[in-house]
Length: 92
Image (cartoon, rainbow, N blue to C red; front, side, top):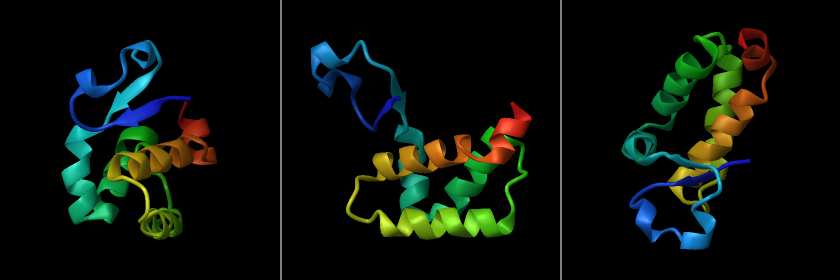
């Protein structure tokens, strides 16, 4: 599993830098202003835009339920869910 961050990689503890990290800095502003748009963009990137509207609606609702988490962790969870979907598996 990866770890998500947004910001400066040098702020990550040095002993943890050898782990797998995904930089979501460019996605954070979009996700904070319009979560549906970031989920639709991830749908396009990860599945070739084949997630159903119902699936996207579920992901948007789930994203909203994670309001306690930092934005980059919320995006990371959405990426994980999309990559766990049958649509992603079929494309790969």
